[in-house]
Image (cartoon, rainbow, N blue to C red; front, side, top):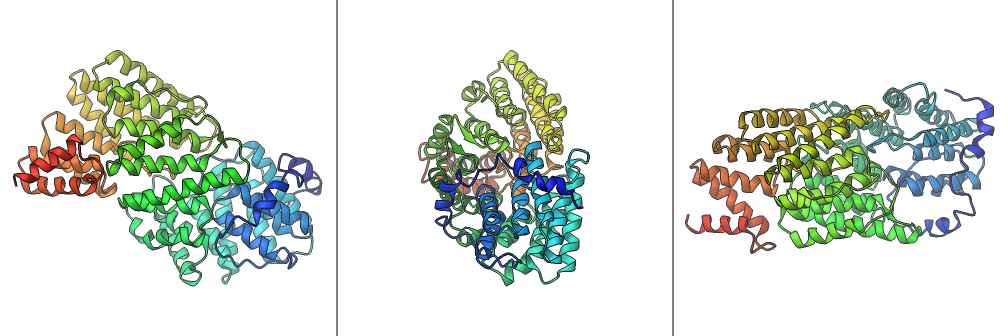
Length: 545
């Protein structure tokens, strides 16, 4: 798709909101000090003087460091006006394929203008023109064609580029990313993910220092079925690009999937520190959303090993944050999920019932707070408060149902799961246990049918764990044990499920199973929470058997 010449002439005006060269002086002064970002081999027809910068910018693009990649590509375009691929890079840095929200109209306008500028430059190669034409399929007619259709068009275009240039590993890598971007969240065969992973593993074997190969393998296998296949890449990626905050964080997606809590904690401590360093170097006014993302994973991981004091410190740090860059779902989700996890995982119902929604976090994030409040109120027997909180959950879902954002349908589904869980908790509080179990099973069925978003380490509390809790409370320990065991298959080594399984096995008169689960509780938590009632109960059980 080729854009009219007038659009290329308008590119400067279209990109005025990107930092000017003067504005970027500070940023460019530390660009070379960003450290190691991995190794990329991406030959172009650009001048030899900018080629190392170009490959470095592509490396940052592969690690989703879009802020710095965009600046770098624009700097290259200014240094070498004949480098059409620099404008390809600007366009690529404006679309974040795996982010939980689609580009807004302003970003799409800038991307379209960058593509037009790339197409207006003569003298590039056929391969480069194909790369530019591929990204043009995403930005072209963005006001007439919906997001998913354009993402699919880009995927098909990159498939053709990868086939046409079979020895071009970058084409294969970008095609793999496109497959991940278009993978349906309801496809439990993980067809796109398997296909992408197969391609990426071959590249990774050839180029073990390539940030994109390692990074996208992790994304390909970030699910309960395939997670073990990404462990080698997860343990390598942070070393490949040690200066990139996202490269420090991303391995924890696999560590969380496999219940490797200490590795997940170390990963996110490093990521949060790197993000804070970037905030300082870039003179950011506020907290980078990537630091909050790491903090959410930290709280989740700390709670699985009983490190309540460490988790509390992260919660307090998050509660003091008032300004986030950029404001959006990544930040909003973390700000809502962090305090909700801290109360719900610890079954601190009074604390959950009084959580306050953060302003301007968006309906998907705000629903988490209302969900936690509803569960807390129901557990405390405050029926009226629970009903009011559930009404707010439904309001958040209605907002998502009406949203034009192409990702809103997914989040509306996640909020519907929360509504059913809250309704089930309320029904139980009202003594309507058959209805409570029906509602909770429907929440489990719905959660099983979709995959979690990369924005979260997992549900604040898996629906199946809530079902198992309900079965325990309604004196059905054998059924509860089955549900806890099933939950542990998809979310291994979670403290709540392990302890719940131990309780259920004990109540179901299966002391052998109970002993194994209680032993796991002690193994995971004894050095961190010596006075915890759950740990004491586990130790008491083991002492007499």
